[in-house]
Length: 99
Image (tube, rainbow, N blue to C red; front, side, top):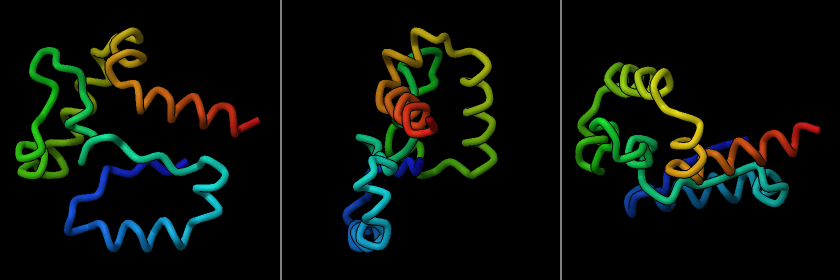
């Protein structure tokens, strides 16, 4: 499974090229695209987890990793399944395609 951020206007051409190059993956349902431009924008609006587009763009890699680890340790199954639906559905697809 490949999970992609929604491409920005500037990244759209490269994203389209990627999708063309890996068309067979897309046809098998192995590429999913987030509805927003970053994972950080998809986090639940809880305890300050969610980030705006500008906030996410200004974060360094270590900051993103630290936030992801914190959320991974604290998020409930219900929050993940309901408030991070695109990621949950990607995980379900991965499980289905694994068998």
